[in-house]
Length: 97
Image 1 (tube, rainbow, N blue to C red):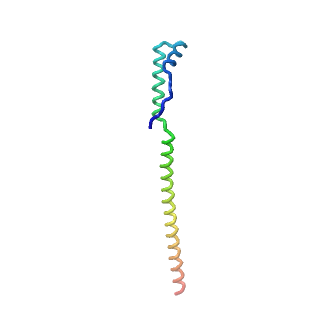
Image 2 (cartoon, rainbow, N blue to C red):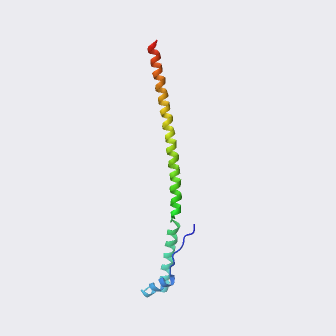
């Protein structure tokens, strides 16, 4: 995805620094350092589309996890119910004989 760079007048920046006591070499060095910082920051930026995609992926994983947990609980409930019926039947049958 392409990131649109805001316009930055580098000549005006260097001239401003020179007007405030920096040598041309110092002003250009500071401009270069500032450019490196901005590039490093932009390399770690995410877009709204990046966040939307990640949120969608997480929602999908959560839905799958909830579905699996629901199936597990339902199967457990059926197992416990079946075991209870079996125990109850065994008790009733043994009491009758």
